[in-house]
Length: 303
Ligand SMILES: Cc1cc2nc3c(=O)[nH]c(=O)nc-3n(C[C@H](O)[C@H](O)[C@H](O)COP(=O)(O)OP(=O)(O)OC[C@H]3O[C@@H](n4cnc5c(N)ncnc54)[C@H](O)[C@@H]3O)c2cc1C
Image 1 (cartoon, protein in one colour):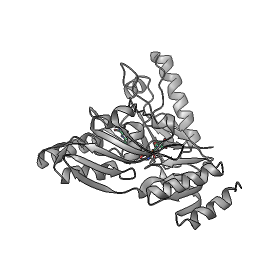
Image 2 (cartoon, helix red, strand yellow; image 1 turned 45 degrees about the horizontal axis):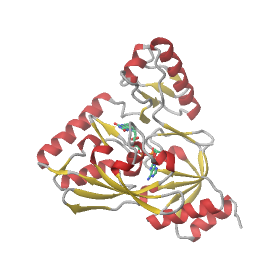
Image 3 (tube, protein in one colour; image 1 turned 180 degrees about the horizontal axis):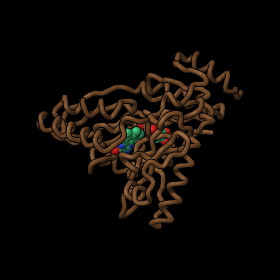
């Protein structure tokens, strides 16, 4: 028998999984934007994630997998069904020979610090990217000349058919801010990284240098979802936006950052509609000015 959303909530609680109803997604996104999630669940193990997925599938309830919410624009109407918060997948172990095994919910910064503690180099580029490991694999997150593809060994994911699969990095179809997980809807549960032995002092210096570059170039004092657009071939989105005279352009509470034109910031009370209208405005102006159609990097979710 198929049950409705109210009963699904009761079932989730009965399974011992922490959950809440009607929670503003603005609390779970770096943009501080987004209407209510009908249900947000906080599984603390891979088994609980599998149980949630099964429950949603059996009752045709939509679900959304949430990492740190740092690449998301959630609609003002919110998200129907169950938001599965992966923050509870927090295991982090060093297996030796440069291999770290990491739960999908671990933050990239925590992972980078763990690599540092173990004198392992290779992940410094990711220090300061405010995502979870699962979100970073899904997006093939990257910065300063590095990307997840360079350091991943393999990952374990829960497939749509509920089977557990291990996939080597070569089969993840990792491209520029893309992976196979967008297509196959797999839920990344954990990932292993292969790093090299390094000098702790040098690793630390590189991490500090990268954080400093972020602080000086990015408007970290405002809520945002990072660079809004993908880098168009042969150009930089920020430079094209700046050349179109759009720095500081504001719609409602959303504005093009004065510090980094590739960022849209929430100056206070921005709605998803404000951001979407600003995205459209920027796309039109940049296309008119330079013939380049900017493609959003951030993921739009919701009703
Ligand atoms: C200030 C700032 C700076 C940033 N700088 C960078 C940067 O330098 N480089 C860069 O690449 N990005 C950057 N970002 C964007 C963002 O941090 C990355 O895209 C990050 O990888 C998103 O991870 P997340 O956990 O926050 O994912 P979320 O935003 O929660 O989700 C993003 C997508 O991943 C999916 N997802 C999340 N977890 C899982 C999982 N376990 N299994 C399957 N799917 C999952 C979600 O469903 C969603 O579709 C920046 C963002 C901010 C706010």
